[in-house]
Image (cartoon, rainbow, N blue to C red; front, side):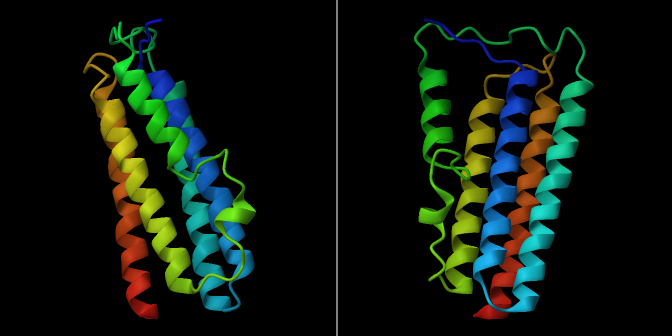
Length: 163
């Protein structure tokens, strides 16, 4: 079986990753007692929702040419890499959120989990970027990467407040 990727498929994956992030941040806000931290995490959930909206709009604006398959992967190496990355990381949708966040975590532990998930999302998008040509919307994937990088900066800055 061979697999091809295009900007539309990548952006759909980005939308799902953002949805998973929203769930994570809302759950995290529900388990931490500090009102300031709750608000911060809910603000992050709102940022994820805005990114979801942005990625959906980007997907909807793709031309028919950008929706064409971009890369031929006869040995499925790229597909296997991407699926392994997505399945094991990036606010994993298959993982039970109650197992990811039990309610016993400290603020630092929650933030560190969030930072790791954001880093994993960047790794995922960097892998995806390699399978998308310029004509298929590579710049759109690069925009997704920059959005995720901004989340890490925000999380790191707030984590310093709790250390």
